[in-house]
Amino acid sequence: MDKQTELIERNLDVTRVGCKFSRVKSIERQSYRGRAARVIANGQAGHASTTDGLTDDQLVQRASEMAHVTVPKTLSFPSELITSNPVPSTVDQLTDMDLRDWTRQMLRVMRQHNPHLAIELNVSRIKEDVSLHNSNGGEAYLSRSWLEAEAWIERHEDGEVLVALDRFATAQLDDSHLDFARRMARRFRWAKKPIEPARGPQSVIFSPRSFASLLEPLLMALNGSFAFSTNPRAGKRRSGFASKLGKPLFDPRFSLFDDATVPARPYSAWVDHEGTRSQCTPLISNGVVSGFYHNLISAAQAGVSSTGNGWRDLLDPPVPAPTNVLVQSGDVTLSGMLKNMNDGLLIDLIGESDGTIGLTGDFSRTIVLAYQIKRGRVAGYVRGVSVSGDLYHALQNIEALSCDGYWSDDVFAPYVQLGGVVIST
Image (tube, rainbow, N blue to C red; front, side, top):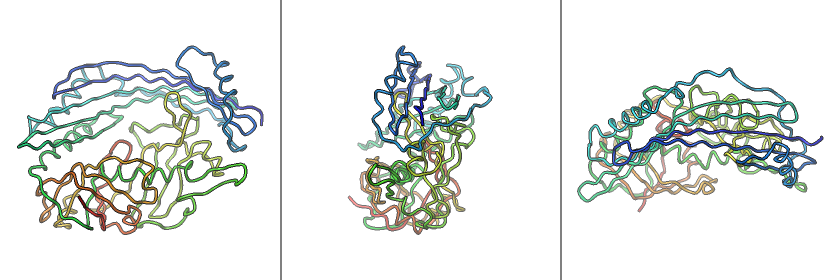
């Protein structure tokens, strides 16, 4: 195939409201513009990007000079025009005063039952516009807007310092930001007194936030670029879950999807950053490994079609990345789970880990905030101890899935009760 070229321009406009010491302190705007070119020729790919005034021809020339990365010879840019009739976004219609009011609403809810909390809250409105075309006749135009919030809250009481950090995102103006604020406030309302937990293997409940964090290595294992690769000598190589495709590895109640078509979510889109239509991709269906998310390169390596998961930062080449990840919910409320558990631990926030650790399912995290459950009720809070186990083994026999979950960044998950989890110092 003759040389293929691709040109993309991506613009980001960010309006940010900053709060410190529980007061709105600043509002600022920043704009970012990046342009990039990719070239594919003779099984080699090259990429070049700029934020300055390079012409398209200069970008393509630079990408051609950088074409040293071996890619499958079947790799081809899309040839379809993908766009959508622009619909005015309610997020775009927010004025600076509206953004301040939206932020103050969250602050009021967070401090409602504890006015002495020290709150640092950053709220950002992000608008993205993307224009892409390639030498195969493919074109794509994408415009979307969303809101992000990050909250850091401290409580200083009786010589104890309790900290909670969480993030939130939405693409619609509803009460979901207040639900996030209520969850932040509830953490401090439930954390009345510190309690030493029981050590050793036990049954625990993970909140949607902590379970989303545990899923990070699993999502990496379902990334097509990690599951499949090619080299000139060995051809296509399968690793990890690629050799388990179609096999039941988990509890039949466990299903996991990547879905860029979910309405009004920040990471939803009708097209990705490579010009491929977005879709819903089953990753695990009723416990069976059923698929992987791909961009153009990883799909060519696997011998399949891209799932529309080719996403890029402002200046980097596209890579496979999840959009909206959904864990199938169950049929019991959190209240019912606590009553059925009677005594145990509800883990709400856990420390981050290196995403490359735990591809086999093993995990070990520090508990940032958990609650000791006694007789089905929250009796106090736990922090600083470790939680560890084998996630994949625990997911083979899930003890309970709640029907009431929430979005944590790009993951929607229920409360999940797993057995055999080890609590230690």
